[in-house]
Amino acid sequence: MIRTGIMLALKGCPYEVSEEVEARLLSQVRDLEFRVNLLRGAGKMTDATLGRYYKNTRLIDVTESNGIEGSTLELRETELAVMKGATLTGHDPAYVRDAKALFKAFERLADLARDRSATNIEQVKQIHGLILGELPGAGVFRSEPVTIGGARHVPPATWAFVMKGMEDWEKWSVDRASMPAPLRATVLHAWLAHVHPFIDGN
Image (cartoon, rainbow, N blue to C red; front, side, top):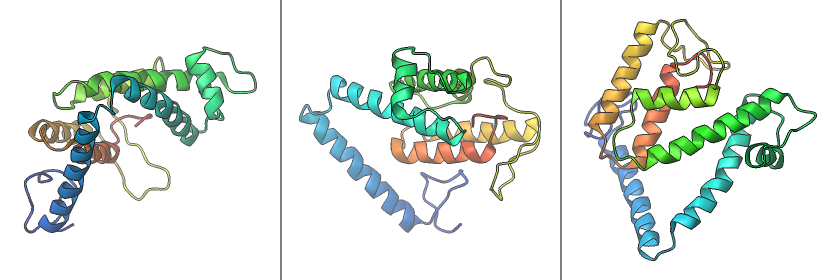
């Protein structure tokens, strides 16, 4: 990681880069925001269009995310379980429960996206609580060590270190509330996964 010539936007997070790299990232993000604004100005990004888009991609996201955790539900089955409440035979009922829970969490995320305030610890706990539902540890930061399968990284081992990591995460989020959303979201997501504050469902 380059430590000289750091620009303000990424300063204070674990992902500081050189001025040159950061300038290139910010330029690409601003171009993306410019294109989005053009589409909005042309009336092509209506609420109805975005609603259809997010409904379709959300089901794909639910299917793929739960597939990483071992779910055997395919896209069509996820849609039947989530949108129609269908009972699916031949699958562990926990996979259906997980699909419904993750879909609810994505709906809540869409609501939070309309809020211009900085992403914070309480929002993360709320989303995690929706994902895990009635399972132990839902919405609660861990107080014991965890390992990440196949990774060399070892997350903080104690509740105090987890809290310190997440408090630093939240402070950076609040201090960078006006930063371009795609770059900010990328940093916050990677940083949260690095701290790994929950036993499961990070």
